[in-house]
Image (cartoon, rainbow, N blue to C red; front, side):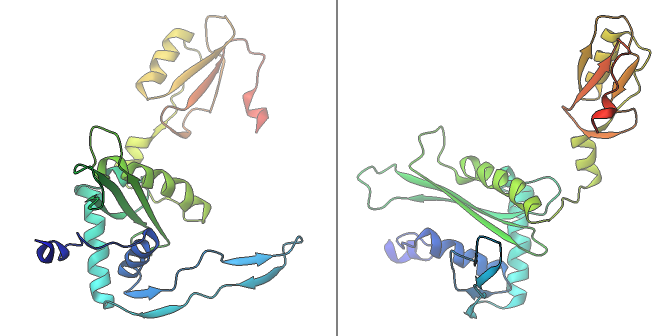
Amino acid sequence: MELASCSFGQSSKVSYLQMITAVAAIVNGGRLMEPYVVAEARDADGVLLWEKEPTVKRQVISEETSETMCLLMENVVATGTGQNASVAGYRVGGKSGTSQKLDSEDASARIASFVAVAPVEEPRLAVLVCLDEPHSWTTSGGSLSAPVCAEVLAKALPYLGIEPQYTEEEQQKLFAEVPDVTGWRAEAASLKLQEYGLTAHIDGDAERVVAQYPLPGVQVRKNSVVFLDTTGENDPTLEE
């Protein structure tokens, strides 16, 4: 059976660094890169002292095959077993992996893994999350490891200056336009905001809202807090 199982990677052992290097080559136009840990060194004043230049070891697959694999990996996240790795505003590709631990005395021992790359149109990040013998209701990498990949990408991509590009569907799902509730009774205003997926924070004990922040018409993320002033004493826009 080992000859057959080798065809899909079982029986073979690779390190996590080897695995992520291989995945990077698949989405990197087929170029196998030399992995490294330190990208650059700077002195106390921030002056660049040394910088590592990326090194291509060799071409392992064609650019055409790489493009096809990127689309297939994107489909895994869009409609397949990797949907938990999706990040709004970004095209993410990925692949789940649930492997047996053949050297374990426990026949049910598994490693649940997921690898994600983004953005698919021009990959900048590859994230590999491996959970060694997870104690959970499942050992599926798509269920356990993919959400961790999504969280890493959601924080790392903006840090690299890659801003999200939301689809119309994502805009409607994630954002809401703040309604105008000035002049409303505070309780009614709070209920109105809930209809938009927003939360009210009421200042004062007066009956009606005399000011609000954010202002009406502003696009905000759903679950955001809208401050409602019933006292007339606060101008929250001054904090800007």
